[in-house]
Image (tube, rainbow, N blue to C red; front, top):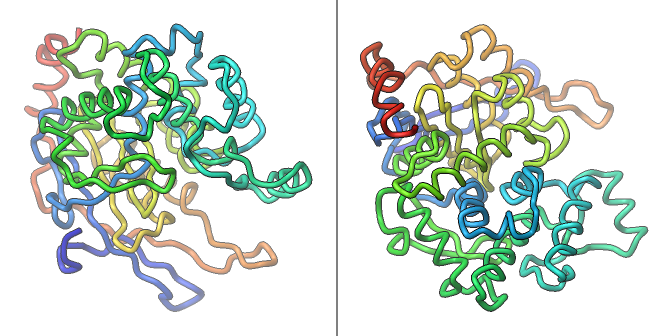
Amino acid sequence: MTDATDFVELARIWRGPAVESVHSGAVVVTNFDGRLVGCWGDAGTVTFPRSSLKPFQAIGLIESGAADALGLTDEHIALACASHGAEPFQVALVEDWLGRLGLDESALVCGPALPRGQDDIVAACQAGGPRRVFHNCSGKHCGFLSVAKQLGAGLDYANPANPAQQLYMDVLSEYLGRDARKLPMGYDHCGLPAAAVPMRDMATAMARLAVGWSGNNARRAAAKRVVRAMTSYPDHLSGMDAATSRLVRATNGKVVLKGGAEGYLLAAAPERGLGFAIKVADGASRVKWGVLARMLGHYGVLPVAEAEALIQQVEPPVPNSNGSEGARTQIVLEQPVPTTPTEATLAFWMGGVKEALFP
């Protein structure tokens, strides 16, 4: 991570007439070719995208042939990209997937967990308590299990040397434009290797993923299927009517996005060839959705008035224990100083280059 002075103020939390909390962070916007379009804070900030990397991990599931071999649907693909809340429909998909693999949940490296929703927690406790299928990353783990099995590798898919992990490293390297194996590596909460990536590179990778960029035809098709699944089934990515779903639906699928732990968010607007990387410095997740909504207005993905109204949908008032407003979120991130996309830039993207690169 960079020094705190390299971050900018993103949002304030108000309780009645006074500011109670302030969230700072960084926002980076790039074109698919890596050109910096907008930046607040340090574009070179190196930090962990965490679960925002799941769409890149899901590409190997399709490229390897595992998805077709198992007869997986786009719902399964969306779940592979998910940080889900273990709602009943999500758990049913995980169990269906394990059944297709001929395995039970003991094959999952992620530890036992409880669902996110209060009613689902009660039901889970009444049925026996925490389970691995309830873990928010269980779809991703099913994906790695599927790739490992398809490649004839051992099922120790958390091992960085496993061919399933190596395929993911190949995918990530191509989209980043650098060797992902040389990035700082840690371990995610779910037990799988996790890379720390410069935010500028991550925004570029997301823009490339969203437009199906790759020199490999199979990978290009896989990326397009991942994006289609994520925009067709946004509820699978988190939960019913979550912020992710509201953002995708408000844009009619013109935005693909995936949040990660500790205040990280990746998004892309394929029609504009733009990628967005957002990091809330203190790890809070509650303001990143509103920051993205403001970006969508600024870069013309939505009319400004619609984008500002969307902020209120994805960052609603924080209720007190009686359900009335306890606090409210104000996104204070202002217009960028760096150059914004010019008409020439947009013409470059929307014109012949787009068709030549991504037929």
